[in-house]
Image 1 (tube, rainbow, N blue to C red):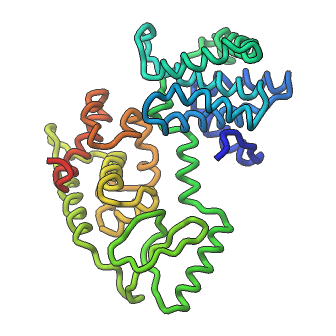
Image 2 (image 1 turned 30 degrees about the vertical axis):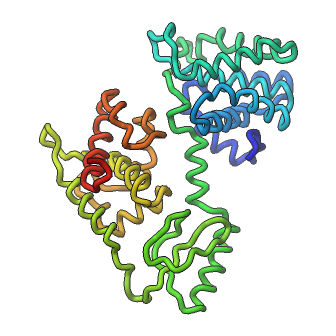
Image 3 (image 1 turned 60 degrees about the vertical axis):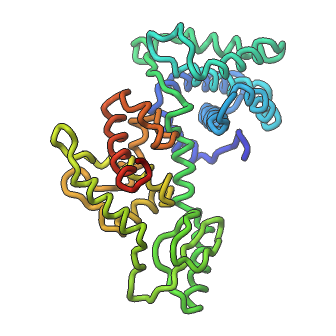
Length: 356
């Protein structure tokens, strides 16, 4: 997949609406727009989107991420011009630097080797350095916003937070293009003519008991089960165990006497445990449908599961969003949000025998 891509106008508008909530993007946007007007460069949205692709690529490297910087720059230079490539690397640099919490500026931080690698490459090349110096100079000199107030940028770590590109990838999987929908319809019609009933939801790659076929259409798997039209698929033993564990969880109380799963966002911990350890759907839409199938999604009060709250929950706990639930205990003391997601996951893992 290319790092840099060109968007249609509707896509640019949609991305701009999403990026506008990011402090750092709002600070970068006028600078990038000014460069576009002055030098005829790439638009701000495309540059920011490309920086997200670079950050996602870096996240995929488990260790010594700084060694990937040279390869990222080389790819960018193959896909676009020098000025654009250096501009994108400057954006990546500042986004990595923004992980430093206030008051900890003099301490080492996880992203520091990547930052040093970028600065070293850009400062020690005669072609890159003037571009790097000009862009970073403009960025750090802009201290007053258009509202007349000092610019305030909240710390955020792109190596752990959910990026807009992550959401786009999820939505792409959940909302296939019209062409794929048509292909799926043809497959469903062919299956229907063959006398086989399709039960359940579209899934991405889930292995299901009693599954007799996994038909591929446009890259999306269809779960095909050999059940009669009038009946629902019987619940497997593992489903029964999971249903029972979730029902216990929904009744469980914490040390304060309130429900352990207090609000709908806490379903995110259930989603992470079941998708990570129990082969449940990692696709959020499919997961919500599965919970409804088990009869556990509808809970009184503010605790009912829905897709929107599930999707947004990770933004409250960015430091555990990309790591396994078994490792959440090291992060649980960061805030109440972390502690509660950890408590829900811990309860469920103990009930299911994932953790002893």
